[in-house]
Image (cartoon, rainbow, N blue to C red):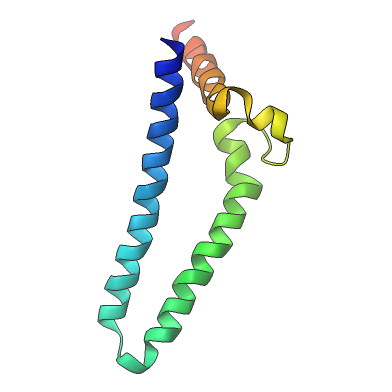
Length: 101
């Protein structure tokens, strides 16, 4: 049962990442449709730079907020149970605090 939980958690995170990348592509097409042809390269560069900056910012700030461990903690810490161990402990601790009134 633990293998199924770990696999489904990993699949959920992977599908979420795919949807975010698809959203960026959709917004790129939307913005390219609203600008003149001579400004399309500038719009694409802006979109790619935004994506790159916010990806780096996520790994410096957002990863530690989301998973409770620093992204630069080390491979042994991040690879425990395919990374699912990070989310399971955080969710169970949160549920434990919410149920103990």
